[in-house]
Amino acid sequence: MPRAVQAWLWLKQPARFLGDCWRAYGDVFTMRLPLGINLVHIADPELVKGVFGGSSDVLAAGEANAAILEPIVGPHSVLVLDGPEHLRQRKLILPAFHGDRMRAWEATIRNITRAEVARWPVGKPFPLRPAMQSITLEVIMGAVFGVDDRARREDLRRAIVQITGLGRHPFLLFATRGRRLGRWAPWARFVRARGALHAALGEQIRDRRRAADLAQRADVLSVLLLARDEQGRAMTDDEVRDELVTLLFAGHETTATSLAWAFDLLLHHPPALGRLITESEGGSAEYLDAVIKETLRVRPVIALVDRHVRQATQIGEHTIPAGAIVCPNIYLAQRREDLYDNPAAFWPDRFAGHAPPGFGWFPFGGGIRRCLGASFATFEMRIVIPEVLHTVVLRPASRRPARIRREAVTFVPHNGARAVVITRTQPTARPAPPPQPAT
Ligand code: HEM
Image (cartoon, rainbow, N blue to C red; front, side, top):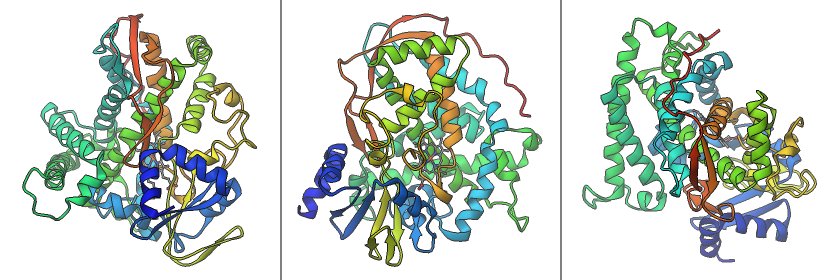
């Protein structure tokens, strides 16, 4: 097909186009897009393993990400770096997501969820995805940025909502980049919102550096300020700011959309929903874990990851030319019939007591680029899902589960995952117990 047609199908019917290519060409195929962009999709777990284990001198993720993400996340972001600089940033960030630290955020996440659910209308359809976005944004402001000040929270929220809104139409945004089209053109609005975000984060970083209780705080910002690399160097303010913006944009919408998919799937599968409620009320988290894994399998928010091929390389029997982009395809590999019975069906029981197959389940990517927030996202989902289900009785607003629609680089529910609150089962304003101290 002409490149323009492939691009149109990839934008407008991404899941269907992937499925059609897979059936026609098998586990490795090339999608040819305008501007000479060639995406080599890989759905074979063995080959995916090879890509994730490949050298970053040959397969560069940072370079592949930078083209689109650098204007948003900045030049110091772990997402756009490669080689030793990437590893340094990763090592500095990783301890912030240690399990013990995250446990201190549990009460915050629970309280934020309760406050959000208390605002939902009863008996009227509403989209769950924006509701989940407001939960995950508040969680990032508390757990990652550690912002207590109301005015600063408001400044941040305003700038983030504006940038996220503009980021939903990346083509419009980039088409107006660098052009003099007036102050209301998308790119000009983006630059202003980014300036406001940087200003608020800059103040937050400076204030926190001076805080007397810096070493006692569990938020990610405080941990980043105290982190030292192997040479004993701390991060600069600009580095810390870029990493905070990265964690925000990598973590906020991805987790919110995964939560929205989880509810959409559960509400359309009453036996799974019933089992989840019964088992969670009995104090077991095993089925909840299975529900989360199955949601991330059948509705991965990020359908593929990319690596820029710097020099021609061999992947299995395929020679991939320099300049191509190799994409381990999460969406396709997680729908393989040789790994999953009835792969298109939502059936969490397949993971109850069973670990997912290696490289046949990788919603968080892999190798040295695996998602830094994977355990944080799962931790948050584990709190939000039961909290919502114990507080309200929901029913789906549509007969069928939502279709997959593309929004920028993510796969989202086409209708925002609409649901109706039938009744409230718990008083929603009760405060959560005080946070457990980090051990
Ligand atoms: C369900 C929610 C999430 C999903 C599905 C997800 C998925 C992914 C994927 C597929 C990648 C690319 C990995 C690769 O290239 O191999 C990634 C990278 C990353 N994610 Fe997530 N993510 C989620 C939540 C989060 C959260 C909550 C945070 C932090 C607060 C986060 C921070 C990052 C960072 C920093 C990277 C870049 C890692 C690197 O390049 O070394 N993510 N994520």
